[in-house]
Image (cartoon, rainbow over all chains, first blue to last red; front, side):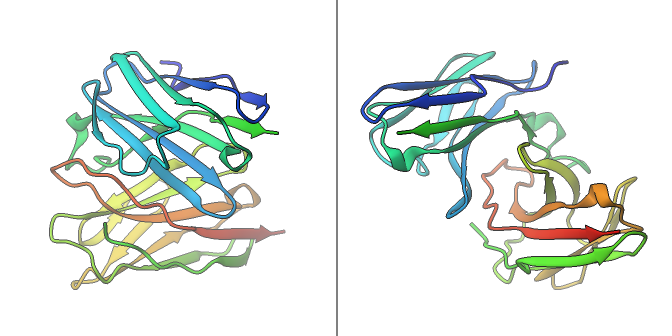
Length: 119
Length: 111
């Protein structure tokens, strides 16, 4: 398996523009997570899905952020309109409940991240 | 979510054993303790997970006292390539849960 795939790897945009980040989880995984990492706030969980259904979006900073998972192999995180304070590295991760309770039950597999810069 | 407290940074030399301790006073009964490693410009990577006592795998050992209010990640004979940020997390278990990563511990291994 190629692991979690994210695109684009780098995105530079101007304030006010719409940004869409994409993620392809590992095949067979039923959990998908979106994280944001900044120097100031560290690694924050934004939202996670189980079987394509959003379970907890309490980490989504505001209404400008939205996430979808139309099928088991694809998810998007959209920011509209983008602001300079949204500049961060955004990670997607996936996991399988099938391992829950085992020695690697809490293993999440992270993608390489998308570095977003909003000017 | 149970939060964790770790040292911000640690220094070590190649070949030494490194122990990173994490405090998690509010850990819940069904919470597991999980450690991740993150290199610059990469996503975090799972290292080890445990519930109580001691767990060992090919990479590290995890020591958890009976009260489970703290845990210690032990890295044997570190090398320069072990320089990274190490995160201690609590949560998960039989009902998959979200995690609070915190700030982690920046381990700097010197030659």
